[in-house]
Length: 234
Image 1 (cartoon, helix red, strand yellow):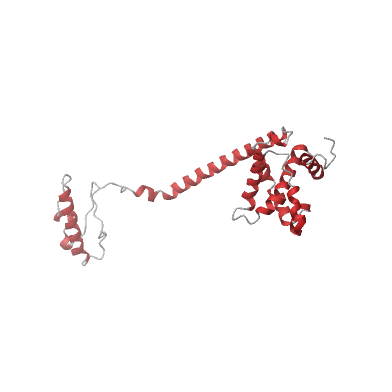
Image 2 (image 1 turned 60 degrees about the vertical axis):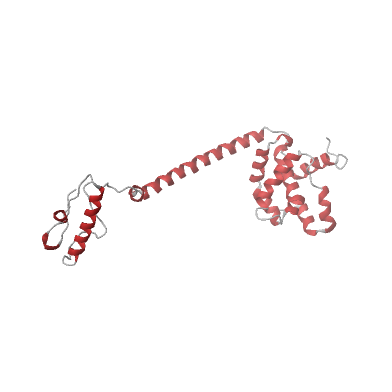
């Protein structure tokens, strides 16, 4: 690259300083001389095009090291964004695939005790809206009413838990899934979960697996808890 620098009396920086390719010290001295020459000339030349802080050498690396990221930042961000979109799309496809697998697997199950932890987690997640409606009082629920009444009605809910149709591990899984929905910040609603939403969720899972109504599932599960309580023909 050949570049002349306008200096006082028509002389150029090349006339004033000789830069050698093999000496780093000489190159440094040349830079100083060029800078001084520029300062001497800049007062007399309003059209000078030399930047005061820049020294251009024929052997300077271009683009300077580190400039690639800055120059291509937009393209790089676009590439990252496209990669993220591809990952999200792949994850979405995997989620849809796994959901179809869950549905197929659950259809083949004829006893609630055969449900895996993953399947139970899936069923709770899919029933979140239903549980929110019970929690908000938008669905008629005897347990919800008894809990709000308090006193003896609330205490008797402990005998109406419907957990005996499931294993301890299954009950823990369902409870944990409900806590993830209703107790993210604190345990304020833990008592409500134990007395209302946990048994209601267990009944709903039973309904989905055995294809029964709420009343029938309640009776079957109550029979599991106390066989003489309901005559269900079991």
